Amino acid sequence: GENVEQHPSTLSVQEGDSAVIKCTYSDSASNYFPWYKQELGKRPQLIIDIRSNVGEKKDQRIAVTLNKTAKHFSLHITETQPEDSAVYFCAASRGMDSSYKLIFGSGTRLLVRP
Amino acid sequence: SQTIHQWPATLVQPVGSPLSLECTVEGTSNPNLYWYRQAAGRGLQLLFYSVGIGQISSEVPQNLSASRPQDRQFILSSKKLLLSDSGFYLCAGLHRAGNTIYFGEGSWLTVV
Image 1 (cartoon, rainbow over the protein chains, first blue to last red):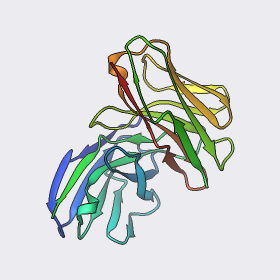
Image 2: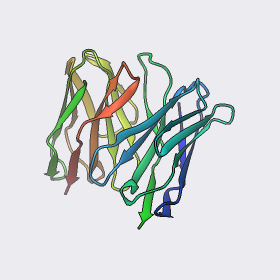
Image 3: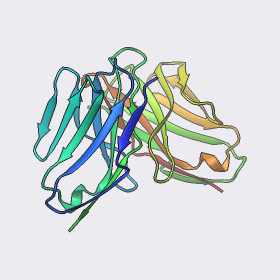
Image 4: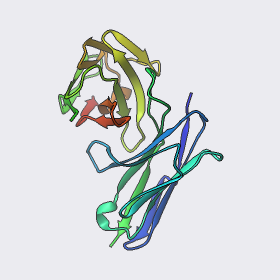
């Protein structure tokens, strides 16, 4: 089955700097890669996603890149703000068939220092 | 839009007691439904998923079971809880239009 690895486990940056979180996946058939943000004690919330037919997607200060050949994808947050502090999870899945499952990475705890 | 409700929000249960967490979905029909568990400070582990009434797939062997008695209802159960069952349990549903999973509010379980 799919296995998703995520690095780093913790990341501390100064406000205004950029943050990058990287993930690798094992199933070459995976074609959907979302990113979730989880604040303390709350449910994960989808912040951005990318599908295998594109290499990059941006939404204001966040962007995701995908390298299908290398089977890795990354989350980029620019001009970080204290409210970006949270745990971020990457995930991977394939298709929309009846066995659709979203497999998550282990998470990255991002701390943005004021 | 699809909304996922789960309850109770928090519970404290003694070791050996039973468990029942309930999840319901609004705004969609025939959704795929999932139960995830998150131990304190850890990642999201997929426990069960269901593609329809009475259809349950288990991802990991464990002390828990799941049932789907109705299209929009998904239940997580245990006959006898273990200390290791403590964690944050999240019900999730597949938003087919966007191919995206959305989570319920979560249930905090502490086994003492």
